[in-house]
Image 1 (cartoon, rainbow, N blue to C red):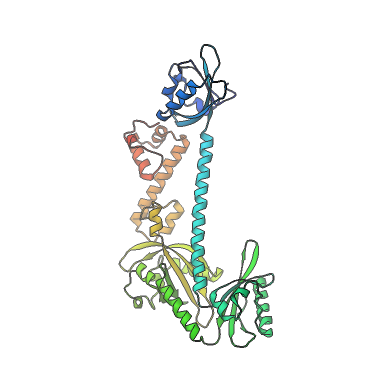
Image 2 (cartoon, rainbow, N blue to C red):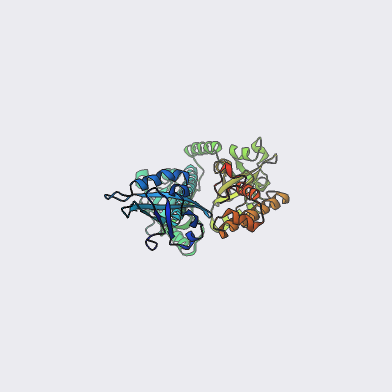
Length: 452
């Protein structure tokens, strides 16, 4: 029986334990020898007692064997065990065989945590896709995405559908060279091949076959799902007509009402344009207070975050989900997430930033407003955001939490042993567990009376 199970019990017909045998070293250290002579219901948790009575009552059944999951309260903590019971003698002797479920419980917990992490990552990617798709569709500049193999259009924003003089239903899967003058098609094709080979190329000027419109084309390459694509930005050379002006007015109005902050800066990092949401984040009463001022007056750690962003934009052409802070005019500090893209066409390049507040998300996630660092590396991200006194206090909290977690791991979650390792009283140890949110503590455990 010992070889066939993790734990075996021999009981009389009344459920009193006559003998105990365990098959694992982990269970042998849990103090089970004092079970002999006690009733089975007295060595399990309160909610498991009806299951014990059910197993004893059905032990003599010859039709089927029932299985029940019980919980033993041992020195090292609660142990879940899956039991079956059967009657083996005419005198009513019962044998109960159990399988330790702690490894299975641990695997189930890991599965749940992995599933939750995947769901959070999926939600984050969906939000990022929504923001970039909004920018893609609202921009007045024609933008086209083509595959590198046949230069066929994969996706085009409404501005491109309007200005390339091709029906919207025929634009997809149509070659980007269609509708261009022959010499313009050759020039664009040569530029796109150069981008594929070297990663960059000078912009080229193209003309539609009708000769009505001319564009400056600039392309950049990227890969997705093991396939290569080219993003082509087309800047009209001639001035926009009345229809384009009306379209731009609508787009500007939509950006003004965007719930996320939107700001455009010049190469010298000064604000060229800002919407209402950005003014609210920066606690500014009017747009004139922002125009012409350096963006790092409000965004990020002075002289650090914005410079890092510009380096990334220069090297990669895009910044996604960059976590930083925004400082209000009246001293408030709020965590934000931003994405940025450059607009390098034309004589005056500029950079666009979408700034999203993380305040509501952090509140829903149960995070503290000051943002307790999760690791030592995270402390470096707080330099410049909080005072040295707060950094020292946060460092102490991180080290204290890591020490408690290490003590619990070394003691196999035995809180009494962990408290002794750290030289703490039971009351002090429980207080620190509550403070850092470690372990499942009931209100009745504050006095340390049940530290097992």
